[in-house]
Image 1 (cartoon, rainbow over the protein chains, first blue to last red):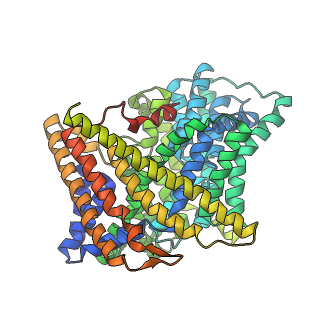
Image 2: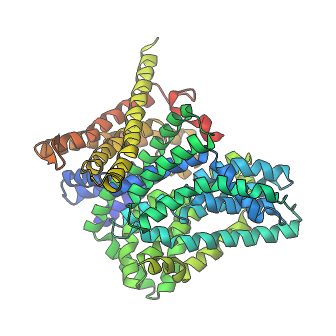
Length: 426
Length: 174
């Protein structure tokens, strides 16, 4: 009964459209009142949730990505991607996907990726003769790679939701191959569609321009070297690497590229504060919610429920994929990571699934949820940037969903894709 | 200027103060941590304060900024049902949401103050003069700010699109 009070209150308040952070807090309060747990404990857990040093990596990654996105990085990565794939049929669409892969190594946010790459690529693709809806679809789907390719602040959220028991470094490394496979599936689809519909070939980049294009992009890509190099060499913790990346991004965009104006910085900080504090409040309240879930043995009950359906881990993973895809259509990525991770961790332990591998499955599932109606932040931003309606986009998204589900199936059922690189680095 | 306009103007200033304080905290942390790394590896003189100072600033950043995020309406919510119902039901749902936000804000104020009272004698290890109560004081303060922003929404209505709150969006769209 107590567990139903907790979950029922949360679901009811979410349905009422109460902000999810407050719904989590109120559900924890309701369950605490029902079970005579002092509310001071809820407050203590909430404050604990926001004073963890590792949390700081989230605003830093968002800030570094924001500085790079608005400091001309997107255009330079597009130019670099053009060197590799711009000359083949459907070249600009391929450039779009590859630029998202590279941008993902800087920003870690699919919304930022869509806004930055989309504003550069969609107009170019439309001018070259690609339909606007196709250009938008390629952009929004390609941007999901950013959630997997390191550094992903969603990996940090997953690690924190797991109580800090899962290494952020392992999660970063685990995302590399799934992110590339996701991009590969999209590239395969784009090639197929481009050949069938006769989309144009792109212009090859002149040989003498290539060194300048590569050097220009390398300055920005230095961020990933600082972050991953710093973490893997043991010089930085993930939080420190994110802070150093912010300073580096600032120096590159202001002094090397010179595209960013100092007067734009307060606007960027304003936006980062709004975005990140929303996530921080979510994390604070979700810790209180998680505490009540643990007290009321919700994870144990969920484990028993799944085991009663099947004790086969592949069936379990299939069911989890379906569940997360459905939940992802209604709710945003960060809250779902924070709510579902503590519930599923004991279940995956029973099934012998590695939590790093499971993190990739969750992030990819919920990333697909970002481009599904009715609630999909990346879908909304993509429609705004592409100047198309959501109905037009969704009508032509199904082949992209198929490609993404292929990638999801590979990541789900071949754990080595996620675990090989972290295993090598141990 | 009517009382409503004066209140809305005051809330604009409060919003700017919240974003300003949180933004400065974020910028300060962004420079503090690399300073710690620089001192540790380059100067070979590790500093003990950047990490705890960052955590103190992060609590302030999270809660004070969180109150501003409420005014800016950026907290994530599930809108599917609200978008599907008629205007009358939507109004009633809005009132229920405001009641819930009030409950959370009151919880943050009352139990936040309790937390400050309980912890006021203990100090942050690296800063012997800094009481834990100061570290946690942004929680009740954010509760008060959230209530003030909620009163604005109920009494004056949603801030207009010309409000300072949306000043960051011009760049976002470009």
